[in-house]
Length: 113
Image (cartoon, rainbow, N blue to C red; front, side):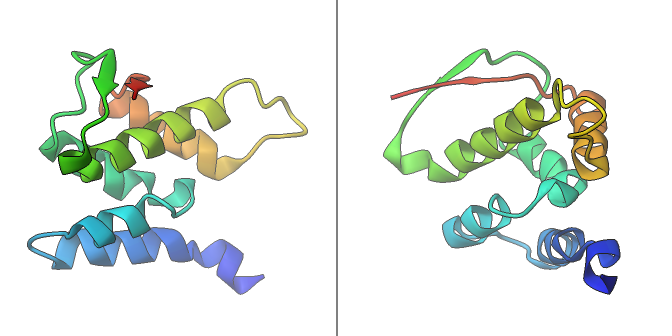
């Protein structure tokens, strides 16, 4: 019970993003598997990769750029999970992640193979 209120995914993301000068491919892949609690730390990272501001509507997959792909997938996942949940499906983490997406002007990006 304590762990659920401690938001361990937020702590992990915060530590990794703030203390690692250059995140590796594996770091970003791991961070994007964390829950919506990590969103406040991952959306600023998305800005570094040029994924914010609504300029992009689609992204064509490129094996040389897997970090960007993972970040887009995470952003899209957060947006899709926060919509239309109703009272029974309400989740505070997804609500806060949606607020972060709006704050950083992240918009759904269509992933193309």
